[in-house]
Image 1 (tube, rainbow, N blue to C red):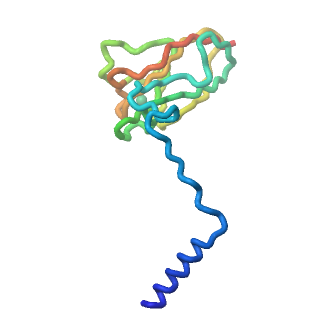
Image 2 (cartoon, rainbow, N blue to C red):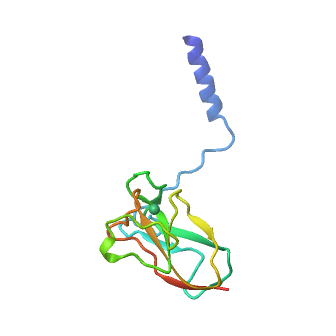
Image 3 (tube, rainbow, N blue to C red):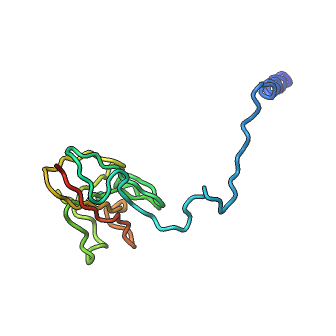
Length: 153
Ligand SMILES: [Cu+2]
């Protein structure tokens, strides 16, 4: 037992004897500019697309989200959801309590994807992101991006 204590002591001394000092701990005071967006509403947005953009297909779309986390569909973790891309459509305001439909105009990213590459024929499109919960139901209030119009040429 005494030998074990000695070995532990030697490890302790060796650890203290290292040349590099421990990294200083940085503490950010509450309310500083770098504080998380506590209390602000969750937002979903297009990271790399803006209203009026002219793009080519296939098109890479990066989904931005703040104030919530991303989890795959079916994983019911508080404060998380997954992305849905609405193409040339919008949610029916009378059916916000129901799962988002799954079709060509309502694309689910139930794997928890935060970006996608989609192919779109030449033309004009409206795009919108909507966050859905584990059961594909929009949050209340609904977390939606602005609807943007893009042109694929
Ligand atoms: Cu979904």
